[in-house]
Image (cartoon, rainbow, N blue to C red; front, side, top):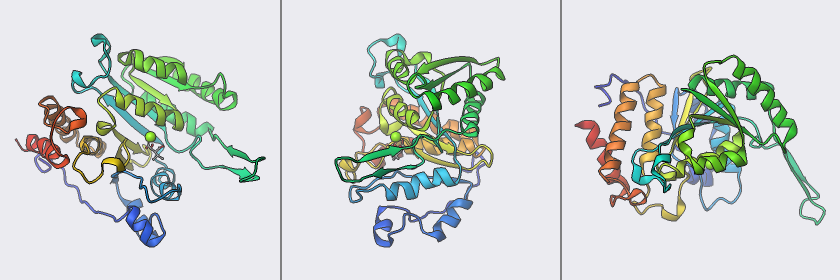
Length: 320
Ligand code: IPM
Ligand code: MG
Protein backbone atom coordinates (compact mmCIF):
# COMPACT_ATOMS: atom_id res chain seq x y z
CA UNK A 1 0.00 0.00 0.00
CA UNK A 2 2.75 2.41 0.87
CA UNK A 3 4.34 1.87 -2.53
CA UNK A 4 1.11 1.56 -4.48
CA UNK A 5 0.15 5.05 -3.42
CA UNK A 6 3.49 6.30 -4.65
CA UNK A 7 4.95 7.29 -1.33
CA UNK A 8 8.63 7.07 -0.63
CA UNK A 9 9.32 7.86 2.99
CA UNK A 10 12.46 7.34 4.95
CA UNK A 11 11.84 6.45 8.59
CA UNK A 12 14.16 7.05 11.51
CA UNK A 13 13.41 6.14 15.11
CA UNK A 14 14.62 8.12 18.10
CA UNK A 15 15.02 7.07 21.69
CA UNK A 16 12.93 9.83 23.26
CA UNK A 17 11.00 8.48 26.22
CA UNK A 18 10.79 8.47 30.00
CA UNK A 19 13.30 5.61 30.34
CA UNK A 20 15.88 7.58 28.39
CA UNK A 21 15.10 10.68 30.45
CA UNK A 22 15.52 8.81 33.73
CA UNK A 23 18.81 7.40 32.46
CA UNK A 24 20.30 10.60 31.06
CA UNK A 25 18.49 13.37 32.95
CA UNK A 26 17.84 15.08 29.60
CA UNK A 27 14.41 15.05 27.90
CA UNK A 28 15.90 15.20 24.38
CA UNK A 29 19.68 15.12 23.96
CA UNK A 30 21.31 17.76 21.73
CA UNK A 31 22.32 15.12 19.25
CA UNK A 32 18.80 13.75 18.89
CA UNK A 33 17.34 17.26 18.78
CA UNK A 34 19.50 18.21 15.80
CA UNK A 35 18.20 15.27 13.81
CA UNK A 36 14.59 15.49 14.90
CA UNK A 37 14.49 19.19 14.08
CA UNK A 38 15.60 18.39 10.52
CA UNK A 39 12.84 15.86 9.86
CA UNK A 40 9.97 16.77 7.53
CA UNK A 41 7.61 15.11 9.94
CA UNK A 42 7.56 13.60 13.38
CA UNK A 43 5.22 10.79 14.32
CA UNK A 44 4.95 11.05 18.06
CA UNK A 45 3.77 8.28 20.39
CA UNK A 46 2.43 9.85 23.55
CA UNK A 47 3.91 11.56 26.57
CA UNK A 48 3.59 10.92 30.31
CA UNK A 49 5.00 8.56 32.89
CA UNK A 50 3.96 7.94 36.46
CA UNK A 51 7.57 7.84 37.63
CA UNK A 52 7.97 11.51 36.75
CA UNK A 53 6.21 13.91 39.05
CA UNK A 54 7.30 17.24 37.63
CA UNK A 55 6.66 18.82 34.28
CA UNK A 56 10.32 19.06 33.15
CA UNK A 57 10.03 16.03 30.91
CA UNK A 58 6.76 17.16 29.36
CA UNK A 59 8.07 20.67 28.78
CA UNK A 60 11.36 19.30 27.45
CA UNK A 61 9.77 16.99 24.92
CA UNK A 62 6.31 17.79 23.59
CA UNK A 63 6.07 21.47 24.47
CA UNK A 64 9.66 22.11 23.35
CA UNK A 65 8.94 20.52 19.98
CA UNK A 66 5.78 22.58 19.55
CA UNK A 67 7.41 25.84 20.62
CA UNK A 68 10.88 25.61 19.09
CA UNK A 69 9.72 24.21 15.76
CA UNK A 70 6.99 26.89 15.87
CA UNK A 71 4.25 24.33 15.19
CA UNK A 72 1.63 26.96 15.82
CA UNK A 73 -1.35 25.15 14.32
CA UNK A 74 -2.80 22.25 16.27
CA UNK A 75 -5.47 20.50 14.22
CA UNK A 76 -7.80 18.23 16.16
CA UNK A 77 -10.47 16.75 13.94
CA UNK A 78 -13.46 14.90 15.37
CA UNK A 79 -15.33 12.71 12.91
CA UNK A 80 -17.93 10.14 13.90
CA UNK A 81 -17.16 6.94 11.98
CA UNK A 82 -20.00 4.90 13.39
CA UNK A 83 -23.27 6.08 14.87
CA UNK A 84 -23.05 3.61 17.74
CA UNK A 85 -19.99 5.45 19.11
CA UNK A 86 -21.91 8.63 19.81
CA UNK A 87 -22.75 9.31 23.46
CA UNK A 88 -25.72 11.42 22.37
CA UNK A 89 -29.26 10.12 22.62
CA UNK A 90 -30.70 12.24 19.82
CA UNK A 91 -29.90 10.69 16.48
CA UNK A 92 -30.37 13.90 14.49
CA UNK A 93 -27.54 15.54 16.43
CA UNK A 94 -24.96 12.83 15.99
CA UNK A 95 -23.44 14.03 12.72
CA UNK A 96 -20.00 15.04 13.94
CA UNK A 97 -17.39 16.17 11.44
CA UNK A 98 -15.67 19.14 12.95
CA UNK A 99 -12.17 20.48 13.39
CA UNK A 100 -10.70 22.24 16.40
CA UNK A 101 -7.93 24.62 15.32
CA UNK A 102 -5.98 25.16 18.50
CA UNK A 103 -3.32 27.85 18.90
CA UNK A 104 -0.27 25.84 19.88
CA UNK A 105 2.61 28.14 20.79
CA UNK A 106 1.29 30.82 23.13
CA UNK A 107 -1.39 31.43 25.74
CA UNK A 108 -1.11 29.94 29.18
CA UNK A 109 1.33 27.30 27.96
CA UNK A 110 4.42 29.49 27.59
CA UNK A 111 5.54 28.89 31.14
CA UNK A 112 5.89 32.54 32.14
CA UNK A 113 5.12 33.54 35.69
CA UNK A 114 6.33 32.44 39.05
CA UNK A 115 5.67 31.75 42.67
CA UNK A 116 6.30 34.48 45.22
CA UNK A 117 6.69 33.61 48.91
CA UNK A 118 6.57 30.00 47.80
CA UNK A 119 5.42 27.51 50.38
CA UNK A 120 4.11 30.13 52.81
CA UNK A 121 0.57 31.17 53.63
CA UNK A 122 1.21 34.38 51.74
CA UNK A 123 2.18 32.67 48.52
CA UNK A 124 1.19 34.22 45.22
CA UNK A 125 1.30 32.15 42.01
CA UNK A 126 1.16 33.93 38.66
CA UNK A 127 0.72 32.17 35.30
CA UNK A 128 0.90 34.55 32.38
CA UNK A 129 -1.46 34.27 29.42
CA UNK A 130 0.60 35.41 26.43
CA UNK A 131 -1.29 36.47 23.30
CA UNK A 132 0.53 38.21 20.47
CA UNK A 133 -0.83 40.10 17.50
CA UNK A 134 1.06 37.79 15.15
CA UNK A 135 0.14 34.62 17.02
CA UNK A 136 -3.57 35.36 17.22
CA UNK A 137 -3.73 36.58 13.63
CA UNK A 138 -1.99 33.60 12.10
CA UNK A 139 -4.05 30.97 13.88
CA UNK A 140 -7.33 32.67 12.96
CA UNK A 141 -6.13 32.99 9.38
CA UNK A 142 -5.34 29.30 9.28
CA UNK A 143 -8.83 28.44 10.52
CA UNK A 144 -10.28 30.29 7.53
CA UNK A 145 -7.91 28.42 5.22
CA UNK A 146 -9.22 25.04 6.35
CA UNK A 147 -12.91 25.88 6.90
CA UNK A 148 -15.54 24.53 4.54
CA UNK A 149 -18.35 26.93 5.42
CA UNK A 150 -18.02 28.39 8.93
CA UNK A 151 -15.45 29.37 11.53
CA UNK A 152 -16.55 29.70 15.15
CA UNK A 153 -14.11 31.67 17.30
CA UNK A 154 -14.11 30.66 20.95
CA UNK A 155 -12.71 32.84 23.72
CA UNK A 156 -13.59 34.20 27.15
CA UNK A 157 -13.46 37.87 26.27
CA UNK A 158 -16.24 38.76 28.70
CA UNK A 159 -13.99 37.91 31.65
CA UNK A 160 -10.44 37.89 30.24
CA UNK A 161 -10.73 41.35 28.80
CA UNK A 162 -7.18 42.17 27.63
CA UNK A 163 -6.40 38.97 25.76
CA UNK A 164 -10.04 38.76 24.75
CA UNK A 165 -9.97 42.21 23.15
CA UNK A 166 -6.96 41.27 21.04
CA UNK A 167 -8.66 38.05 19.90
CA UNK A 168 -11.84 39.96 19.08
CA UNK A 169 -9.99 42.59 17.07
CA UNK A 170 -7.94 40.11 15.08
CA UNK A 171 -11.01 37.90 14.57
CA UNK A 172 -12.99 40.77 13.04
CA UNK A 173 -10.09 41.88 10.86
CA UNK A 174 -9.24 38.42 9.53
CA UNK A 175 -12.89 37.45 9.15
CA UNK A 176 -13.56 40.50 6.99
CA UNK A 177 -10.98 39.24 4.51
CA UNK A 178 -12.90 35.94 4.07
CA UNK A 179 -16.44 36.96 3.12
CA UNK A 180 -17.32 33.52 1.74
CA UNK A 181 -16.91 31.79 5.09
CA UNK A 182 -19.56 32.33 7.76
CA UNK A 183 -18.40 33.51 11.16
CA UNK A 184 -19.75 33.06 14.66
CA UNK A 185 -18.37 33.79 18.10
CA UNK A 186 -18.99 31.80 21.28
CA UNK A 187 -17.67 32.14 24.80
CA UNK A 188 -15.91 28.96 25.84
CA UNK A 189 -18.53 28.02 28.42
CA UNK A 190 -21.31 28.34 25.86
CA UNK A 191 -19.22 26.49 23.27
CA UNK A 192 -18.83 23.52 25.65
CA UNK A 193 -22.57 23.48 26.15
CA UNK A 194 -23.32 23.69 22.42
CA UNK A 195 -20.80 20.94 21.61
CA UNK A 196 -22.64 18.53 23.85
CA UNK A 197 -26.08 19.75 22.88
CA UNK A 198 -25.63 19.62 19.13
CA UNK A 199 -22.15 19.00 17.71
CA UNK A 200 -23.56 18.74 14.19
CA UNK A 201 -23.71 22.55 14.06
CA UNK A 202 -19.89 22.91 13.96
CA UNK A 203 -17.43 23.02 11.09
CA UNK A 204 -14.24 24.73 12.33
CA UNK A 205 -13.62 26.06 15.83
CA UNK A 206 -10.60 28.30 16.38
CA UNK A 207 -9.39 28.99 19.88
CA UNK A 208 -6.47 29.52 22.24
CA UNK A 209 -4.04 26.91 23.49
CA UNK A 210 -5.77 26.09 26.78
CA UNK A 211 -9.34 26.23 25.51
CA UNK A 212 -8.33 24.09 22.54
CA UNK A 213 -6.77 21.54 24.85
CA UNK A 214 -9.94 21.29 26.91
CA UNK A 215 -12.45 21.35 24.05
CA UNK A 216 -10.54 18.71 22.10
CA UNK A 217 -10.92 16.16 24.89
CA UNK A 218 -14.62 16.93 24.81
CA UNK A 219 -14.82 16.56 21.02
CA UNK A 220 -12.87 13.27 21.22
CA UNK A 221 -15.54 11.91 23.51
CA UNK A 222 -18.22 12.85 20.96
CA UNK A 223 -16.75 10.41 18.43
CA UNK A 224 -15.96 7.41 20.60
CA UNK A 225 -13.33 8.52 23.05
CA UNK A 226 -9.72 9.54 23.47
CA UNK A 227 -8.49 6.29 21.96
CA UNK A 228 -9.39 7.28 18.42
CA UNK A 229 -8.74 11.04 18.27
CA UNK A 230 -5.78 12.14 16.11
CA UNK A 231 -3.96 15.45 15.89
CA UNK A 232 -1.49 17.41 13.80
CA UNK A 233 0.90 20.10 15.03
CA UNK A 234 2.12 22.05 12.04
CA UNK A 235 3.96 25.13 10.90
CA UNK A 236 2.33 26.00 7.58
CA UNK A 237 5.25 28.30 6.76
CA UNK A 238 7.91 25.55 6.75
CA UNK A 239 5.56 22.63 6.22
CA UNK A 240 7.03 20.85 9.21
CA UNK A 241 4.72 18.81 11.39
CA UNK A 242 4.39 16.62 14.44
CA UNK A 243 1.55 14.14 14.44
CA UNK A 244 0.27 12.49 17.60
CA UNK A 245 -2.85 10.96 19.07
CA UNK A 246 -4.70 13.34 21.41
CA UNK A 247 -4.45 10.80 24.22
CA UNK A 248 -1.58 10.34 26.65
CA UNK A 249 0.19 7.13 27.66
CA UNK A 250 -2.75 5.66 29.61
CA UNK A 251 -0.51 4.19 32.35
CA UNK A 252 -3.49 2.51 34.02
CA UNK A 253 -3.92 0.12 31.08
CA UNK A 254 -0.37 0.04 29.68
CA UNK A 255 1.16 -3.24 28.58
CA UNK A 256 -2.07 -5.24 28.63
CA UNK A 257 -3.03 -5.02 24.97
CA UNK A 258 -6.04 -2.84 25.76
CA UNK A 259 -4.89 0.40 24.22
CA UNK A 260 -6.68 1.54 21.09
CA UNK A 261 -4.20 2.08 18.23
CA UNK A 262 -6.62 4.10 16.10
CA UNK A 263 -5.68 7.54 17.47
CA UNK A 264 -2.10 6.86 16.42
CA UNK A 265 -3.11 5.33 13.06
CA UNK A 266 -5.33 8.30 12.17
CA UNK A 267 -2.49 10.64 13.18
CA UNK A 268 -0.30 8.82 10.66
CA UNK A 269 -3.06 9.37 8.09
CA UNK A 270 -2.99 13.10 8.85
CA UNK A 271 0.78 12.97 8.43
CA UNK A 272 0.75 11.39 4.98
CA UNK A 273 -1.98 13.78 3.87
CA UNK A 274 0.21 16.65 5.02
CA UNK A 275 3.18 15.13 3.20
CA UNK A 276 1.21 15.23 -0.02
CA UNK A 277 -0.18 11.70 -0.37
CA UNK A 278 -3.93 12.21 0.06
CA UNK A 279 -4.83 8.87 -1.59
CA UNK A 280 -2.95 7.03 1.09
CA UNK A 281 -4.55 9.12 3.83
CA UNK A 282 -8.00 8.36 2.41
CA UNK A 283 -7.15 4.66 2.25
CA UNK A 284 -6.04 4.59 5.89
CA UNK A 285 -9.14 6.47 7.05
CA UNK A 286 -11.36 4.16 4.99
CA UNK A 287 -9.69 1.09 6.50
CA UNK A 288 -10.17 2.48 10.01
CA UNK A 289 -13.82 3.24 9.36
CA UNK A 290 -14.44 -0.22 7.94
CA UNK A 291 -12.70 -1.94 10.88
CA UNK A 292 -14.71 0.11 13.38
CA UNK A 293 -17.99 -0.64 11.62
CA UNK A 294 -17.16 -4.37 11.59
CA UNK A 295 -16.35 -4.10 15.31
CA UNK A 296 -12.86 -5.35 14.58
CA UNK A 297 -11.47 -3.03 17.19
CA UNK A 298 -10.54 -2.76 20.86
CA UNK A 299 -12.97 -2.97 23.77
CA UNK A 300 -13.24 0.76 24.46
CA UNK A 301 -15.14 1.11 21.18
CA UNK A 302 -17.15 -2.06 21.33
CA UNK A 303 -14.86 -4.73 19.90
CA UNK A 304 -12.89 -7.47 21.60
CA UNK A 305 -9.51 -7.28 19.88
CA UNK A 306 -6.15 -6.56 21.46
CA UNK A 307 -4.10 -3.54 20.44
CA UNK A 308 -2.05 -5.44 17.87
CA UNK A 309 -5.05 -7.35 16.52
CA UNK A 310 -6.91 -4.07 16.08
CA UNK A 311 -3.90 -2.68 14.23
CA UNK A 312 -3.82 -5.78 12.04
CA UNK A 313 -7.53 -5.36 11.24
CA UNK A 314 -6.70 -1.99 9.70
CA UNK A 315 -3.57 -3.21 7.91
CA UNK A 316 -5.43 -6.18 6.44
CA UNK A 317 -7.90 -3.79 4.79
CA UNK A 318 -5.09 -1.71 3.38
CA UNK A 319 -3.52 -4.78 1.79
CA UNK A 320 -6.76 -6.02 0.24
C1 IPM B 1 -2.52 17.49 24.68
C2 IPM B 1 -2.00 17.21 26.05
C3 IPM B 1 -0.86 18.18 26.35
C4 IPM B 1 -1.41 19.59 26.24
C5 IPM B 1 -0.19 17.95 27.71
C6 IPM B 1 0.39 16.56 27.80
C7 IPM B 1 0.83 19.01 28.02
O1 IPM B 1 -3.02 17.31 26.99
O2 IPM B 1 -1.74 17.39 23.71
O3 IPM B 1 -3.71 17.79 24.56
O4 IPM B 1 -2.02 20.09 27.20
O5 IPM B 1 -1.24 20.19 25.19
MG1 MG C 1 -4.92 17.59 26.13
